[in-house]
Amino acid sequence: MKIDKVFCPPMAALECASAVMIARLHSAIYQEIPMPSLSLERANTIIAGAFAKAAELKLKPLAVSVFDAGGNLKAFQRQDGTSILRFEIASGKAFGALAVGTGSRWLHNQAKDRPHFLEGLSGVSGGKIVPVPGGVLIKDAAGEILGAVGISGDTSDNDEIAAIAGIEGAGFASDAG
Image (cartoon, helix red, strand yellow):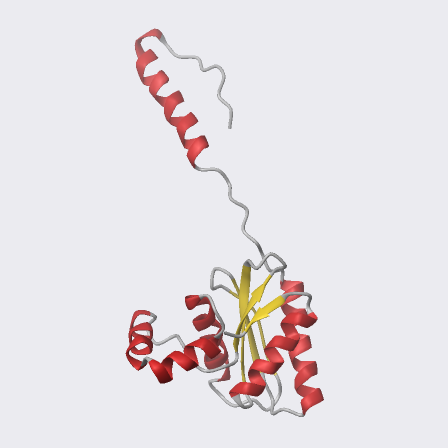
């Protein structure tokens, strides 16, 4: 926003000058910062890739949650035959990965080595974090976090394999932790 000329009545000149200075300062401080984004199309491509890997490996039915970098649900699908709570478990894996900036395998290892740390994370997150493999970060070529995938339905290791396949099949880098 560029401010060159402003009409000010004579009595309000000081107020006008102050308003112009504040507007210029505001535009200098609050510039639009572009954030990397994950499109719905690419999120659905990730899910399709994860389901394809599940079929290839003959895994149990999966539920797949894809979140953007801000922790907002971008896409979710579950295969026929998944049990209840799979959405919550898959989402908790992805949320945990986003919360700590690395895949949920790292959280799983921390749970074994530092249970008090995971207890604290669980408390501050309101119990939203599921600290087992299957939550994988989505990164662009520059290493920026675009979001996370959480999968639940088979073993945690197989959930993670399917998540990595979906992410990398969509042209992104993955971080399983």
